[in-house]
Length: 271
Ligand code: ADP
Image (cartoon, rainbow, N blue to C red; front, side, top):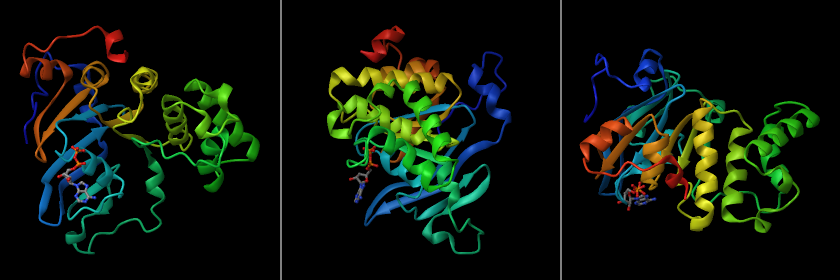
C-alpha cells in the first residue's frame, strides 16, 4: 500500500489525531472483476469518524466501483467491508462462515449521493427528503417534516420545498439529493462524482455545501474530479490508478508529491 505511515511524525497534520479511533468504515482486501477485467484486488481502505476522504484518479481506475462496493451497490468478489468494525458485506468468494447482518438496516448508516441525483421525479423536494425517514419510522409526520425542513434550509433549498425535481437546476437537484441523504442521519456520506453531471455554473454551490458538511464533522468519502476541491476540503486524498492506490496522504503531502502543483486560494475551488 502506498501511504503516509508517519503517524509518529511531530509535524503530522490534524487528521492524524483522529487515528486513535476505530474506523467507521473499512474495506479489507477488496477485490472486484467484471468478467476478465480486474478492476481492483487486495484493496484496503479505512475511514475514521469525521474524516473527509477524496478519491481521485483517471477515468477507469476503479473509483466508482470502489465506492459502490462499500454499500453493496456492486458485489465484491473478495474482501470484507466492516462498519464500525463489524462485518457488513462480504465478497462472494469469502464463504458463508462470517456472520453478516441479515436485515441490512446497517445500510442506512451509509448515505449515497449519485452523479445523476436520482431524485424521485413524482415527489416534491420535501417529499423526496421525508420519504426515507417515513419509510423507516424515524418519527411522527410533524417531526419528520420539521427535521426535513431544517436540513433543506441547511442546503439552501427550503424555499423550493414544494417544487418537483424537473423544476430545479442540476445544482439544486443535487442539493436536494444531499438533503435526502442527510435526512437519514447516516454515519458516512458517500459521494460518487457528485458534480460531474452539473452545468459549470452550479458546481460551486454543491461543492460549498459539501465543504460545509465536512467542516461540521461529517464523515465523507468523495469520488471526484474536482482536484482543487479535494485539496482544499479533504483530510486525506487517495489517488487511484489502474485499480491501485498509487498515493495516499494529506493534501499537503499530495502537493509535495506532485510538486509544482499550484496551491489555489479556497475561493477558486468553488468557481
Ligand atoms: P472510475 O470511477 O475510476 O472511472 P470505474 O469504477 O467506473 O472507474 O470503472 C473501472 C473499470 O471497471 C473500467 O474498466 C470500467 O469499464 C469497468 N466497469 C465499471 N462498471 C462496469 C460494469 N457495470 N460492467 C462492466 N465493466 C464495468
